[in-house]
Length: 289
View 1 (cartoon, rainbow, N blue to C red):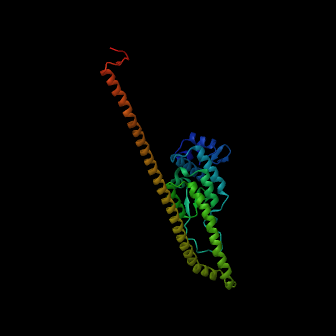
View 2 (view 1 turned 135 degrees about the horizontal axis):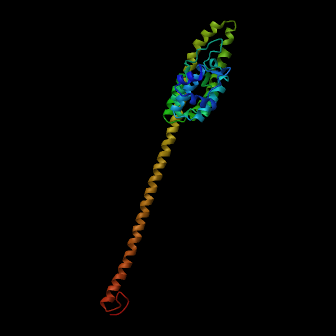
């Protein structure tokens, strides 16, 4: 399609289209002589720009996001993220990959969709780029991450925790894989892929049951310890506040006591002055009548 047709399909003016091209928000069109031809990829990009602008992103921020998007396009194969690369399938993961447009990803995380967070998601392997879409490796991870962000946890903190969790779960997986390799596979060296697949199907629920039980126990231990520490700090904070209140009350009482101690002295001076006036002594001006 030509520029005018593309602008009409995207709901923008040809002037806006030229502006986006000058800002390099769009890839170059295919040219035949002096005619520029655009395709569905350009239309998808324009719709993404419009949607992100409507969600509060700036043109500069959108340009950076799109640049990161383009770099990631060839950096990681979506099939790898979705676990489609192995010849022998494994039954451990029950995750469902999710395809998202950039604007749909922004709907999940709002203004937390930044270049740094997007780059971290790509680096961890949570998302990959396939055509004009993202592929998130797990719907459950996507939705739980979005819920944490909605409750106030910054997406950067969620991704940092995810990176560390990925490292530790890889260690756990290596432990189970080592047990499987050392104690089960040697007895089936002559077995084909079907027999190995059946063995994996029997072992997978046991491995996940052990991990789930250990994780639940570990969470109980750590959360109880955190709650006890939080309660202790809250108790100390209350004691400090109470001590401060008593200190202020004591200071106020001391001040009132000093004021009362000064009052008799002034009363004595007034009584002496009254006696002098009665005896015909100096009057208020210090002179005799």
